[in-house]
Length: 348
Ligand code: GTP
Ligand code: MG
Image (cartoon, rainbow, N blue to C red; front, side):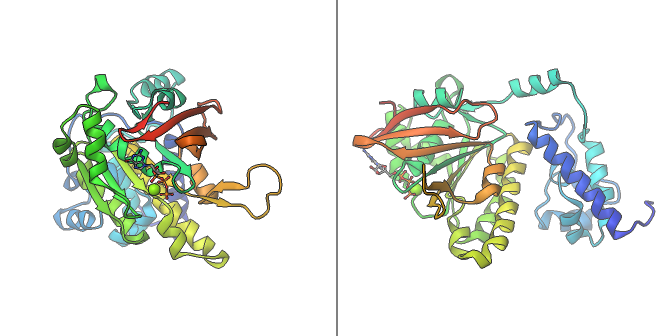
């Protein structure tokens, strides 16, 4: 039995756990591979009834428990002490929670990251390999910049075999703006020489009607990812519902808090299931900028910190598009040009 602890203590330990988790994310680490598969019922102090309760609340696997915060788990279990004990037990079972490792180990783990080709050589070069698994890649740009077109193309690219730049896996497409067009997927597939019909059946689609619904979809996605071999999750756009539901300065704090939860949800999926996450974001005009670029990405610091790689798209002359990487921990601030055509997103 764990000794009873004060609420403050539980809170500080839970913050510790979150920090540990954040550190892992910062270093792009995944937990060691599972060799044995455990059920929730294998956790100390979890019987069938508690396990069912946990599953109902969206905690399906040991991984979900091991990286949950004591605070959120306490909402299901009733007490933070109990939540902490169960989190620790899950971490022991999966052998996770490894706090220190050498740079060599970090390097070796990074070698295992997979890339999805964008289908555009110039963009792949800009991204040094393509869209990375275990990370969130954000495409930012004004209307018509090509964000949705890139999402459609990636939903095809991820399905291609490794030698053609894909991961031989499925895509999960969360459409917040109602701009998903299966015909376009079929067109792009045809151009890549793959059967449009089978490509269409390997894109799992969900329309998000509001921000709560969008978050619910991402929660439910956990059930599909491993079962359906999903390696790419697309959210187009991440931010539109949040912006329209929380307008104005007075709602900003609430909006950012919720957006933060949504992005943490996504980061967790990226890291636990080793999938690539691609999101799109809008730009807005900063009223206080008189010199230089008055546009800036929506979502503020929370978006900036949450997304691993940010690519800003802008429209050039004659259908040309220019992509620029901003704030990347590993890329130089370079640009690449491409175009949108009948065949999809292609090199100039
Ligand atoms: P918002 O969602 O409005 O913020 O814009 P976005 O960045 O998502 O733009 P989107 O990806 O929808 O790009 C739209 C552009 O793609 C348009 O300007 C079209 O010119 C181009 N486009 C879309 N479909 C086709 C197509 O079938 N053929 C060609 N040639 N261009 C297309
Ligand atoms: Mg769009």
